[in-house]
Length: 184
Image 1 (cartoon, rainbow, N blue to C red):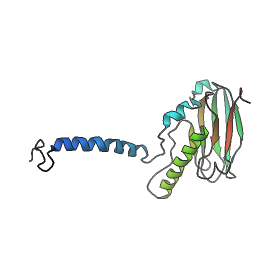
Image 2: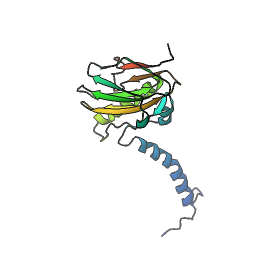
Image 3: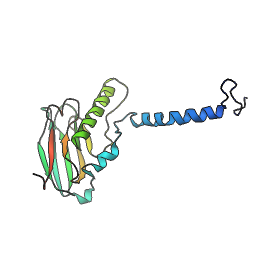
Image 4: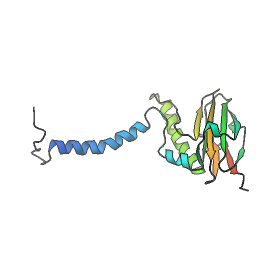
């Protein structure tokens, strides 16, 4: 057995010091890799929870809006009017034969989400064992025929929109504005 406290003759650094430095350097890389292992996750999850609102509570729902996604790359609503502090339950139905996404956020969040969706779709198509799961409270991924619910409490702090960020869908017009009732 060798002594861990012996110094490396060439560099003068103890094996323990080398091990501690290596672990300190590798740990953040390993943790960052785990965030994307096997599911769709976002680097700016806090931004999703604070820009334009936060997840709502079922006990505080003010109204329900049904939104249908279709393969003609349209939602059944092209815009929405909401009030500051209003909690809305969105019932999303994918009546198409392709997958769709529904994300509430600023235009910047939509662009970031499109990049993430593109990477995840590539990983799913490469047979790496990835599956699409949204871990963000402001977004849902719907497979063909799926129906899901999202409850959101709006806060009038930003220009918001909703969109489908499956590659190419948003650019084809599968999006809509969210306007607050006090906005013109």
